[in-house]
Length: 385
Image (cartoon, rainbow, N blue to C red; front, side):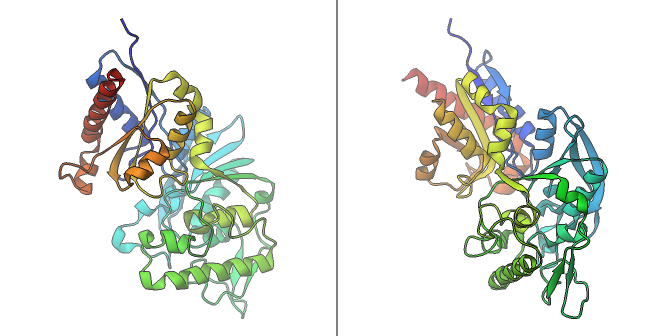
């Protein structure tokens, strides 16, 4: 008798519906619906956004903690973080404090939002004794070049009269100079590592404002003004403190410029989130054990190939010569883009007349169904050679 099929399940979360672990469990049900003898290995993934802290904390044998910080609109929010006591390492998600999902669509205004909550969190983990901080930057709803974070750490933004300014894009319209004299000194002696799911620079045609501003509520007619505002902020910061890198560097535009504040200003090290976390969870070894790999994400689109989980899984599986199936909430990638990523096939939840809202509401059921269809198709193709 042939050996049972072994399937690796390594999806990202489906935003607005299921965590990566929940998606993987639903996929496992779909696999077993096709072949009751099949074995599965669940390796939930992330790329720096929602779910990153839980995934990394579990992988490192740490503990979950919580802190009360400011959200992007200044209201109080309880944010989860991970603590690895043996390494004196904290794991933080920007999305837990300034996430796009924390603000109702009609209330989103990146001109008035800031990242002070991320700075609050950094001070909190420093108080806990952190000597290394791992920060995931995906899923933010802000576009302030990290000025809120810097302000929470003691940096002061001033106008020409010496008046302190609010660390928001609209509040910094009269920015004249930046005072770093009260920056929390502990941050200088802390290893900062931040994970991004994008490679955009801070400003310009591929910058934070142009590419991601609209989805955060930035009106089309103000994109150019916002881009110029971030450029001015960066110039004023550079005049007060030498930068550790260029604003054009990869990842500086992540999370509306948090990458710039953490990397160019504070000297943190930028890593591609999906790659970093794949190493952390031992993805390569799991791929070698599998007959077929199933990954997925909420939307398969043009951004997928630029550091997202699906592309990273496909890249590693291609090196191991293992087929990869993708289950996605919605599919916007062309057949050519799918082929370039090395995916054997893609199954979307939004088919057969199912819209996005319905797919979100029925996500678990539909993931089971699409996985069943995908694995059945792969088995048939395998038998045919």
